[in-house]
Amino acid sequence: MSYELASDSWGKEEYAAIQRVLDSGRFTMGENVKQFERAFADKFSMPYGVMVSSGSTANLVAVASLFYRKDNPLRPGDEVIVPAISWATTYYPLHQYGLKLKFVDVELDSINMDVSQLEAALTPRTRMVVGVSILGNPAKLDVMRSFCDKHDLILFEDNCESMGASLNGKPTGTYGDINTFSLFFSHHISTMEGGVILTEDEELYHLCLSLRAHGWVRDVPRPGLIYEKRPDAFDEAYRFILPGYNARPLEISGAVGVEQLKRLDDAIAIRRRNAEHFTGLFAGDKRFILQRENGSSSWFSFTMILHPDHPRSRDDVFQVLRPADIGFRMVTGGNMLRHDVIKYFAYEVTGGSAVNADTVHDRGFFVGNHPTDIRAQIDHLHKTLGQLD
Image (cartoon, rainbow, N blue to C red; front, side):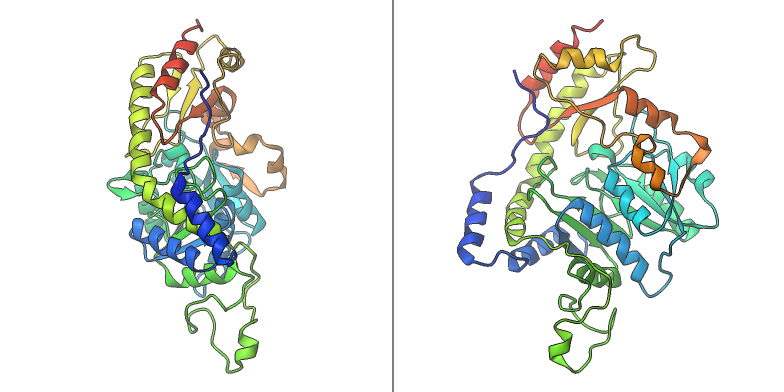
């Protein structure tokens, strides 16, 4: 039996939406993208949504917007507190805009930032905390929000892996001053490539709209907030006010997103049923540390960490999984501090080390979850791992 890491979540509705766009002859960002933005923001009870070309560009545009706001903008050399484990493009825009990263270790069981270290990471230069909910499992975003409010810091929430999760009844991706989502193939909904920025701050919304499309004023809803209109309409059509990007999504992505968003609640419910089966089978297995759910996880996947005291190596586990045709991979991007690219960063590690992140990096892996019933595949995984001592 094959147990893949991810699967296609599209149905006939998505392909019909693509055909409608093809028949329209309008392929660049337009009404379908606007419809998806409105629907996505409404789904999460947020006033402003901006669709972009990927979750990575969502992070890039969102970080950039914080540098161009009128009052108290971020500046190069400011410090930002980040977890040791996340995807690479959580960190890259921070580095590219000249911020210094203060890494904090993760909790071994939740794989999310150890918020008990926030005070130790704080310095007079600290301006922002990046909250990341790993693989569907909400981080302690309520604690981060209170910490940021107490110290007048920005909370940037990277929710690219955890759409549909919630904490204290509040969706992840709505705790931050600015929040990002991914719409990649393996994620909770997919437009193949795509991302979304959500915020309650109208100025940040206008900045993101401009930064998404070359830094011009054409897509900004009204003048007066980030620019003042000038009388020459010809000049205004190509007026650039920010050093922006081309992070625009395609109309096909917007049209598919509208259909995919309709599937989200059912998909999360199925993922949670799969997770209940997985945790029921492995809860008493002393060989593995499972991800402890905080709040209500949307269960992107199932993480497993071979217990540090177990005599077997992770390679021993992989040698059993491979012939059984069970897919597996690194937990998100592993410990960022262990990657070659870190040599280019300005950074410090709170407490001098990230021991738990190292353990996840060296002894952790995940297997897939899907928006379909995969309880038989989970049984296959359980039986296969039974071959280990």
